[in-house]
Length: 596
Image (cartoon, rainbow, N blue to C red; front, side):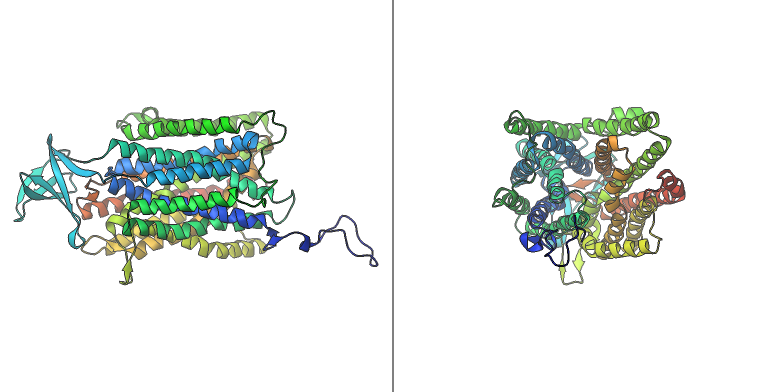
């Protein structure tokens, strides 16, 4: 251990701090254990809720696939966007600790609000201008939909050409409806729909206060130059995976066995535990995450009031997202952007303007080397958007695929729910992360560790191969048009390995390549790129939309073919883009000027 002065052999060594004088946790500051547990329970709530959200929107509220996946994408986009504001407020006014506690309260409130969904929406269909009642028969494991026409139950079946047939109990086709003539919907309570959106709005605003600042508190545990910092963050981030690992099993289980409210209620309890660990810390976190010194007056109440005002702003964005119509075909890129909802305009406008704007500034204000490093960072940020757009199909189109076209039986012993399939990703991350750490360290010692652009390229190819593997699995679908759950598990295995190639190095890459005077701006752009990816992920999932009646698809064969077609397209696109990135990686590495 390095010391400030060298003690003589005749004197006791008092040049360093005796480890017995300070409590440690696996060699780290004792406070890390509390922050680790706080993050674990917060992620327990978030990922438990996320495992339910898409299915909740599609099955309880009976939203169409397009509305469901669009709303899910908008929500996750705001989850990544609001921390930019929450981190800034904490740094300048509130302090990390107060921000975390306030965010935890808002998120707990959001989860509890989601518990109140009211009665399930009642399905109906408008057939050539006339409204008919819909009944969904789930007896004997079936999900057959029936139109009630003058007391008769006519079975509904959709076809690939968009037509719909209504079949009598005797098996005869009673009616064939042309494409566009059968419009399914649900009669849902406006009050409970708005209440659900208020819950999501509370979650997005609360997350903005919580997410960036719990990490800031971890960083404050270590003095500048403390070599334990990276290892401490590694331990801390394990809390994310442990929390998500268990919640993605338990919350969907409760939702299935007890009701949606129970799944969301468990998420709320997890969030309250997270809040309690910070609020009732027994003074163990005193001095960490305090408000910046030198403030003339306490602005806490003003900030809290502003945050509550931000909740209806988020609500407005969600309503606008649901009310928006898709841009007209042939309108071009500009027409497409102008036709987007307000949230899309904000995200794409900011990103499309920021990337060339920052590069132009770097070219004018920086040296040739600095400009090249910034250019390398921008290229990888753009490819980062592509990766997360496809990876984040997990919570939307892949969850719906699990619900509709996957045999969820585990070795014939028991079955899991569609929401629980997201458990695979967390399990594989926890399992593979130590192995990847050993792999990268071993390759680094031999001087053969892949460069950052190569890792990004491998990640893109990996996410594409995962989708292609699932498409291959659809060839083995049974007569019920469902594939084995193990094909979905294989996809998550490949995607988890791909995630470990890109996620741990992204933030580090930004801090190393950015000009020091704009590193904060570049960090903001990095998170903006992920927010854009989340939003685009919702748009991609909308392409995989299939017709549903009463929350169930009208033809499982059509839905299987639709998902297989979309997954094949994005799988090939990801693999090709990954290969392109590998081809240009030597050039990008040259632009990085020795940074790896």
